[in-house]
Amino acid sequence: MLAIPMVFGLAAGGARAGAAWLVPIATVCVFLAHHAVVPCLLRMRAGKPSPPGYVAQRLGWGVAYLLAAAAVFALALWSAIPQARGPFLAVGCAAAGLATIYAGASIFGRARSIGFEALGLAGVALGAPMMAVAAGQPLDRSLFGAPAIALGYFLSSVAFVRAYERMRHDRAAAIRGCVVAHLALALILAGAAVSAMLPAFWWIAFVPVILRTAWGLGSPPSSLRTLGVREVAVALAFTVLASTVLAYRA
Image (tube, rainbow, N blue to C red; front, side):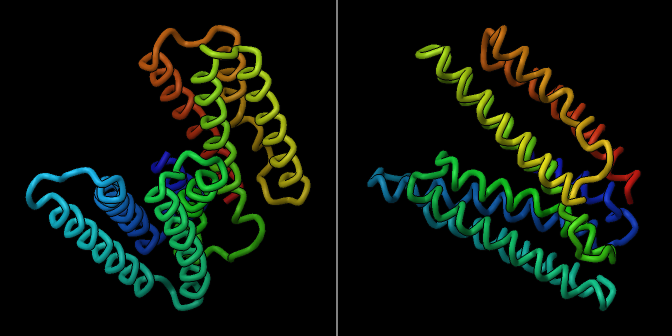
């Protein structure tokens, strides 16, 4: 999931500027900081004993990754053309704020709450417009088509995987919940398309997503491994189709 907004950001015009290419580096550093610090703090909150030096090492790596992310982001901001710096900083702060909220929810064991998970995924999706504005693209409504498409896919995957987990206990309820979630996503994306936020033919990217959902609900994967293989194929197809549509608009 982390790579999809980056690809979208390049397709939406970010490939034309060196500042945009620095955004994925900063994003990966933030991701590594999250996975260094959050498990450690969860362990501390639960009162579990840690090996000698574990906490210091984890927190030290987390701080190092965050400092690296801040340094790379500052370099990207400095490298961007003057008129792009304000929009770039605004989108970057919004993404950082959402990432902070999700990290806090993770520390308190709420990472799988759909509300907090959606906020975290929205923060990840903002990587696409961040790269585009770094390249000088105007910060207008159409620029948020890429994160809207990415977030639509992310939430579809979350809904499908959770339905798969519930199928063993209540297959009918799992299918019903997944269908309702996808109908809600379809309505939201259709509304975004009507408001001219999404590019023409945006729906093509969701054809493999809908096929995956229909196939998975009708014939659930036999194992998590099979589920993962299917999802990788769907993610690749979705990314290629969506990137093509976004590049055509750009």
